[in-house]
Image (cartoon, rainbow, N blue to C red; front, side, top):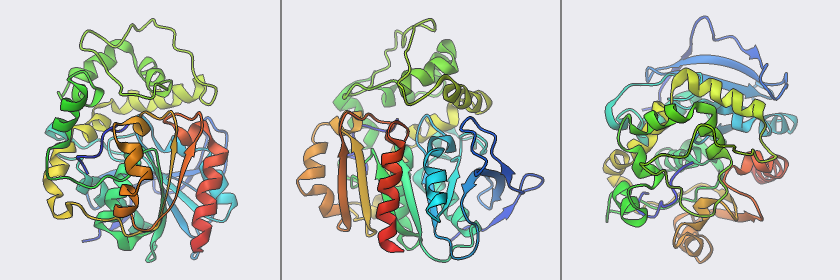
Length: 356
């Protein structure tokens, strides 16, 4: 899950297919869909990236770039990819750096995980698609935060954006984001707990990967998440799964994090202050692409102090002047594209069809 409080945060690369994994492979993941293929590509940023794709690859088919959050991978889009393909779109869902089948760059305190690094990977990926035109983007959680940065840095590459869960919040010069979060929520707030390298990894190792994932995916409290230093529960705690995610889904996610560890994914949080330092040229910048925003009404991000006023009373529209629509889904939590897959697919497709 990405930050609950974003109010204080706020040359193209070439890509060549890697060998021997550059040829598409049919998907054999838990969703059982044979329409999803997989390949690994090597970016000029030095990152080897795993990419899942569905839909027509022929020239002229509009591409939709799908960006996942934490603790997710490409797999969070397993429902939307076939729907987009059936509608004639080319769905492209990478594992972002540090996740799944993509490399995990090393670097202290998240130095290799700033918004500039991650957006650089995405520009390289867009080039690999052969898309000279701007592409559509749909993004959730940390993926949404990254998509806002993509729209800031390279609006020429984005035709329109569907952002899930995390609204745009302009960068403020007043205070570094982690400092603001600590002042607002305390040291046990999960993003503050993540900042110390190794500490939260040790806690996750004590609990076990599947238990950690169950805790995140089952979290539906409309308020801040805290991970006490005294411990985040017991490895033996019973955690009932919500109806929209299965034990098999958890096992697939766990297999990916068992392979990579959590450090790469956690380094996005550790890079928050560094990104803030590097993005001062975009202070109070506007987003100049068409946007649709979707959030669940019990999503913890929707209950950050002041965020609902910002979204609904003009602040959001001021900084995203091409904001087309805001959808608040009733009785829906944070993992909105998995909890309500058909509705979210319909929202994405109906919005991007406006620009065909």
